[in-house]
Length: 448
Image 1: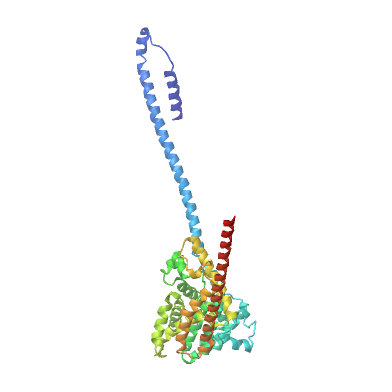
Image 2: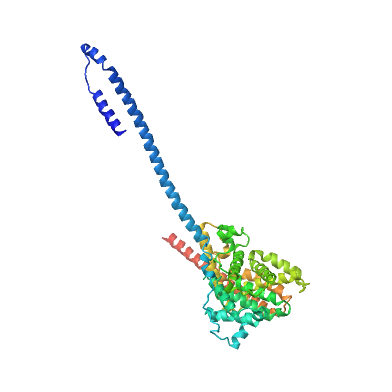
């Protein structure tokens, strides 16, 4: 093709040379007409080839652009996948590494609990902040299972219990609030309620085992972002569980993935029917901790509490659901010096979520917005309209919680209301001072 173009170009140069045709040469030139005709044919061919070349070049250019666009799309998809992986917290139980049980568990206790600690564990005011090493918390949790007779009655291997608790710890994340310390506090509050309300006299030992185990497992692998975020951001968990309690369903799934490890299965000696009961009971209680179901569960309990029947399995299940809900959100039951640090932890986690929601253009709840919420405003409504009504309903069945649990809640409400009044007064004074400054600046400008 290139040679043809060169030939055509040289022919055209020859044809374009200026010359004059005299009559005497006309006869001679008539013999040249076939050659000229061929030259014009070649010129037409050259034009056609040039046009085709131009079309081919255009196609190559377009295809090249497509390649660039495809490569750009590939890069965009890669970035999007990375962003989704980050946003969806898709590293849940990555490679099941966290589910691998530890085998180097000593058969002897590293710490011994004093009688003072053993007694304190049975009280709602237990100060978790004094027991920072997780190893001590493990010993405390082991003690609870032994003290309630669960290890003996169900023939639980003590080493398996240790391995299970270690694996539980490994599957709680280092969130500001939803972490292993929170797991311990909820389980300790459940233990204290079992002791305070003499629940072993009213429940079967299987019920007690379910209550304790659900408390231990209730927030496993919590990512630090609540269900509202999961659903609005359309995360992997929300898609997997069809927007229905995605976190709580995930906690259940992780719990039974851990139990599926033989070295962590504290239920290995149970027959299939008993294990089915434990599984169903534990799942029911963990799913009950979704605050979106709070009204539904409490209303159901209120309908039963005045004529409560301990022989009615539906009544018992409803009570167990309310008990785990009480324990899950019970920090304000504890003394102020124990409860207040938890508010800081919770707000820190809330602010992390609201910051991400703002960055991603998602709705932000006012009670989670660092620009709108304060400690008093965060706690007053929650204590008045969620905690006190629920605990006062439980009080109808168990009058013994009045002094130990309900009264501290009322005192906490009063304290935060006083703090809010102080905050409001300070804001009013600050606003007045700012207004005066503005007026003075305005007057000064007019004088000038």
